Length: 309
Ligand code: MLT
Ligand code: MN
Image (cartoon, rainbow, N blue to C red; front, side, top):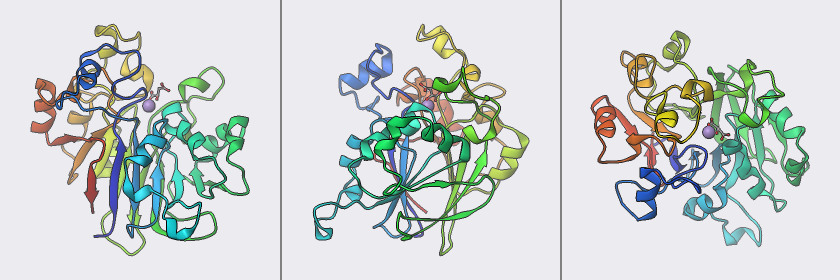
């Protein structure tokens, strides 16, 4: 075993149930229907030794997600304040990627890794100064170069991460101000242990499946991929909102440009959708859409899922 990966949250922004949604997945989740489980917003944690953990993204639900995961609890043998979380790696600056950082205040040291553009978005917003630079160093995650990650005081995590640009867009809250084509706003991560073993890929947001992405993922042992929508127009047809998936920077599961077709000929050992929106019918374990994706070799991540590589 070289890596333990835990899914802390598998929903898109808003989670399931989303506070203002009466859609089927949310209504059934509120009733405790096991075919539509509750889902926090997307976040993973990964460890190479079972003791030191990195968070991949910082979901707005992070406080509750940490409480749901014993591995992330403080160890009292280390004194009155402790966390096994050595660091956080961000894949973007959307609210559902970064808002959990605010729950990690309390002067606990950890390292924060993100691209230059995402770090700039945090630097410009003074609310994130609750994470003092002295205890939470903000470190540049370069694109397309594997980097060994360390805790705030140089503690080795035993984990290597390569961030790579994937098609995407500026975060919704920065759309009017930002350079939307900046490739550093939306990244995927390839993660592996320093001592060797298989790597996995984590891409919670992706606007298009390009040949370059297919080439990169060929041979991957495990892929967590953007499963926001099943159909590009499902927000519109379910009267949940005016935007297509394309407009939101998310490819759909289905359709000729979607993930199922896009990766059909790409050799990936295990494919798991994550970041599912509350409108996605594949959320429902008893839906025809869930059957279709499973017949196509895909799984749906769930909160509490553990994968060992
Ligand atoms: C997205 O995934 O498109 C964003 O999380 C949208 C948002 O910020 O609500
Ligand atoms: Mn999102």
